[in-house]
Image (cartoon, rainbow, N blue to C red; front, side, top):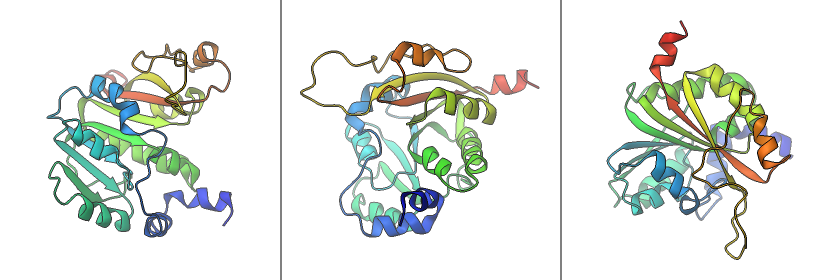
Length: 237
């Protein structure tokens, strides 16, 4: 299977069922929980908040959150294979819930039922497949719907602002802050990070200011912290 064929299948349940049927240990896209924990704690300060992890896969990220004190972490994935495996693995952890669900249609969840949504690579996966823009927009609208007003959508992605800001702003009414983290965190690495994780990167309208601050094609993951703001939707009418 060519890389092009593989990435185009990222939005299909059969691809992920097949992948997880043959993948043993946990795999975390982009970043593991310890590296993102300072940012999660900044925007999800209460351990009592209800958190949704979209496209959870077999990641240990949610386990890390529960180990850190979070009490209600709901995980969804389009693959029944991985959901069944994770339900079995964490059957003794009531703080972790696993549900098979398509992020483009999360009808099982009531509007305004989550304090935060975390996404590591799920939007990116949809953008690799067919009907990418339509599927991504459907997902973003569903994420916005299930969030409480002033709830946060934390999107971890390889997509720079010039590729993601417009899509986020066009989809829903968000207040958006940008953070960055280096892709490869090497413990022996000396010196300071390219940008402090918990400090937002100044954003101008099209996001091109980020390149001026960080340089061209910086080796980072971009983290968009999108706060749902229903007042913006009202004022834009």
